[in-house]
Image (cartoon, rainbow, N blue to C red; front, side):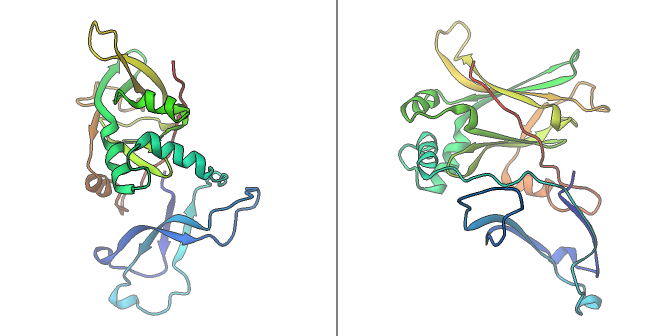
Length: 252
């Protein structure tokens, strides 16, 4: 579902509109959040709209009509020690360099394996992780079950590493529509090769195909580049952006 849908009070020129992800100063906490140590700044999506030539007067507000979704209340920020531990697992040699951590997150998935089950009507994706991850997690005393975050939309999957911030590991398009709230995932061990005694960790994701998308998909998952994702998630006049759904995992 779209997180914000509405009708403007005036006309805009869509081709001159722009958006950016930025930080804004936190002024008020939602009631009931009970946060004792709030962050001073929040990440925010800032959208800039260019008024049409004939509607450049004062509108008296942006929206004539608006609908938004209810989000979970913000949670207490994890401690600096915990964030540093996570950053060390992701990038031991450069835990404080965002560019390095972003590249390390992309390289953490070494192979993607996909299957489909025509009986249960589920699509399964296995993200094979680099071999040294488990050793690093043991060294820095990190529980890997909360080291990853999944965002599942009807046709989009985003898997990120949660260090001192979220760093995208894999993002891509699904071969058909799914039901995000029926997604499950877990961390498992997989053989390095057939007949090998060596194992590595992997994330096993199971997606429920939506009604109308239960034929066999030509391709279960297509990895995308960031600019391709931006095109898919561009505020469209006829569609909505989907960014909901998550799962929990266990190491077997």
